[in-house]
Structures are given as structure tokens and as C-alpha cells.
Image (cartoon, rainbow, N blue to C red):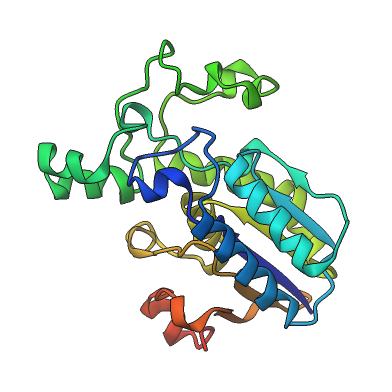
Length: 245
């Protein structure tokens, strides 16, 4: 038996401003810090020993994880990897979601945000928001730095890393991952075997730990959001399978 805990970072500055963030490296707000502290307290109440910690290389995920570890009083190092980054929103990066909905329509914005394989136009490499112009990505191979991504693209890089680095560890250890809305959605698609239509409806709340219990064959036996007041629906699929409390 083991546990996997997935935490979307606390509210970021661009979450607050309703901007498409993607690979831009912004920090969390005071609300985000409070969400991270509560997440840490809720995890602490589970009395679980966390054997491995992972995050993306983005500040909002790392800062959230650092706060959680402080609450847990755990000085263990964590591994940050670009493969767990948020989806790259291409030319939408930095734009306001509400303004874009008025400009091109809510339906089109929803398609860009939630469709499985639709990509926004590529972000110009001249943009200061392009990953090649952001210092934290200097060690990512140039050919792997995206200018835009679909959820499918995000899924492929996230799941490849999960299968190579994390999956086998889950047979006998507990792991906590601090990541992003779309990278966690990608993991949920893999873990819960969601089809391409179901994944488009899955909401991931900020700063609310998703606790997943697995048996030795990595079959999920239970899952629940620890902050019940802010729990998002994990879809009828999961309720039918009786994995959600």
C-alpha cells in the first residue's frame, strides 16, 4: 500500500489577474501562500511519511512545496523537473482570459483551454514570455522547449516522466507532487484512465491536496480531496468507481 498526493500550486499572481500563464515563471499570492499552508496542515493530519517530493521547475509550484514541507517539518530535498511544468499556452500567454472570451468567444477560449489536441498559435521566440528567454529553462534542450502545446503534448511529457521516474517507486513509498492544473490533469488521465472527452471536464483546484491510495499492484483503491470545502468534482466516472469519498 502506498499514497500519491497531487497538489496544484496555490493561487499565483497571474491566476489572480486571470492571465494565461503557461511557462511564465510567476510566484504565488498571499492567498496562494495561505492555500499552501492549509494544504500542508491537511497532509500533516494524515500522519504519512513522504518518501519523495517532486515539483515542476516553476516558482509557483516550488514555493507551494516549500511551504508544505515547512508545515511537515521535513527537510528532505525535492526534485524539480521541467517535465511537470504547466501546459504552454502559446500566443495566448499573458493575455487575459475574460478579454479573450469577449474577443473570440467563450466557446473558442474553452476549446483552447480544454480540448485534447488543439494548440493555440505558437508564441514568437522574440517574446520575453518565450521559455527560451526565461533563465530557469537554460538547461532544457533547445529542441524540447515548446512554443505552444496541446493538452495531449502536456500529457505525453508528464506521463513519460511519471512512468520512467515515479511509477515503480509508488509500489512501496509515498510520493507528493506539487505541479499545475494541466500537468495534474494529465496525471489524472493516466491514473484514472480517463478518455479524451472526460479529461476536458476535470477541474483541479489550487492548493487542495488530492490523496490517492494504491495497492501493491498500483491499483487505486481510494482517492479524496483533503479540503472538502474546496473539493472539485472528480467526474461521474470516479464516483461510479467508488474511488471518491
